[in-house]
Amino acid sequence: MVAEKETLSLNKCPDKMPKRTKLLAQQPLPVHQPHSLVSEGFTVKAMMKNSVVRGPPAAGAFKERPTKPTAFRKFYERGDFPIALEHDSKGNKIAWKVEIEKLDYHHYLPLFFDGLCEMTFPYEFFARQGIHDMLEHGGNKILPVIPQLIIPIKNALNLRNRQVICVTLKVLQHLVVSAEMVGEALVPYYRQILPILNIFKNMNGE
Image (cartoon, rainbow, N blue to C red):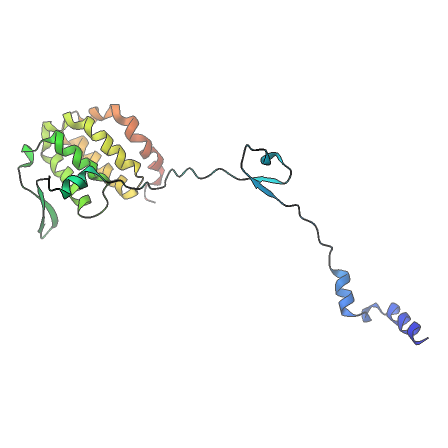
């Protein structure tokens, strides 16, 4: 009789039910989630149910390319260039051991342009300053050498290094105004020079 009374009292007063029983009653039933299968595109697995196709890898258009040993560095380390480093109150500059006007531009100018890929001192300094010095004093010796400069220019741009690209653009600006008909001589080579610049054209100032 006592047990029956306790059962009746619990039925009349549901709030007096044990808390553990009440919590278990409120828990939702677990929902089974189907397992997703990650697969490559255009494969048999990609057509299966619950298959998730992995996206294509990044193209890496803006990713920097590793630098390769340059002919400029090789010639510099062998001491084949008639140059030395000179310090003055304005900073570093090149001390030429011969008159720039007497240099063989067919030999030296492409080598200095090859040094546009350099990013470490003193190679990058000698290459860039040497180019500007030779363009400043080259005159009519520059135009015949244009075809030999295209591959070094293209190699520098293909590094996709923003600092190297900016330096190369400044060199191109100087090259165009260094002698008559140089701008026109570069036109046939636009296909080799412009594609990389087209990739970075909208990134000015970033």
